[in-house]
Amino acid sequence: MDPVDALRACYAFEGVPDRQLRELAQLSEIRDFATGDTVIEQKEVSSQMYVVLEGEAAMIGTDGEPIVRFKPGTIFGEMALVAGIPRSATIKTTEETRVAQIYAAPVLAMMDNDPRLGYTISSNLARLLCHRLIETNEYIDGISGKPETD
Image (cartoon, rainbow, N blue to C red; front, side, top):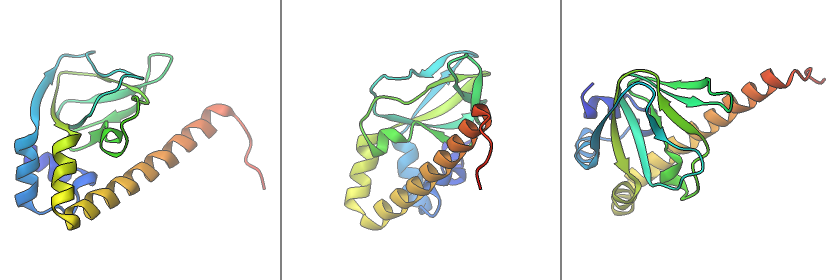
């Protein structure tokens, strides 16, 4: 998948004009990973986010099994853009995978220079993170075995 097409398909960049998607793509570094490679290590501090171009990556649980899968056009590591905190999960590839690696600083600079872009990306990321929180809560409820309360 072409980096601009992947960004266009990515929820975090929904509504971003093509000109700015091309600029974001130019800021990205294309990285290739073999099956089983670690892209993000839990608790490390880093400032990159990733958009899957080809292949698949997955969030890995403490049991070593995939919890969430990331396919072409999806983003992971986006918390690097929101907060400079240690990584919350380990992400590994489940097959040969190509990603666009994007550092937070140039994206934040673009957002500062264009408030409309900043609002669009921030709003999209807020919705994305809310959606992921809901999925996490559902996952926890599913493994806890707790019955629903009235």
